[in-house]
Length: 246
Image 1 (tube, helix red, strand yellow):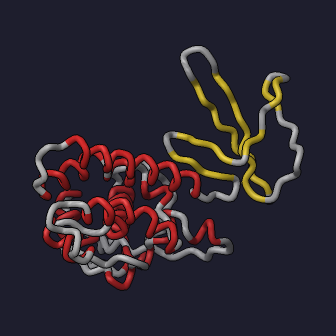
Image 2 (spheres, helix red, strand yellow):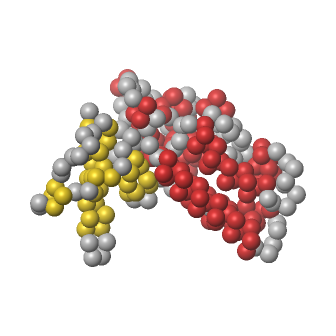
Image 3 (spheres, helix red, strand yellow):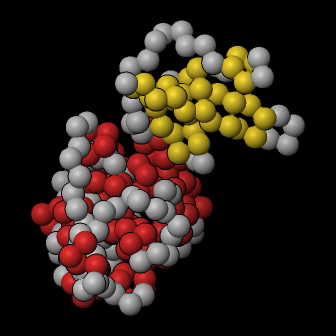
């Protein structure tokens, strides 16, 4: 099955449409808009996220890891103060957003990709004064931080909370069990997935994590309360590489 996606890239002077074919497509597809042929590409960057024709994000991982390493190195070169807390604060403000922008869309599920992204924070914290010979877990504990993998899991669950509680205008992404609606239980039915791209998507990959949350966490009154309760939950079994908690 082939899905055709048209991406519009608009600038002040031009409006360019390109074609991204998803799945097994013919080698020379012919599509046009107003008799103008659309160029077919194997990957595209849309709203800051790279995705290819197999719905994979390898190009995006390459891009953000490169940018994050460069930004982290710049912090270490430019700051005269060598206080670890100050430098890590600069990291959280200037580097971490690069690694977490739209992460519910592209959150990696393969160990190699997870380790590549985590390596940015590992490398930076190792270069802090007095931290070189400490383990990664110890470094994060001293800084009051958690692994990037755990943060992405939490960001996934926070977005799920917003969707299920009507704070984000997204319809029909999750199917809540009908017998639990009246009790406000918000447990989600897990759909059958035939392909990995579906199983690894935002709509499916965190369903077990969400359903395993205590009722008082899922039914938190506000996003702030949900985040506070979520930070106290244990996710060691849900993580593939890094289970460090603050």
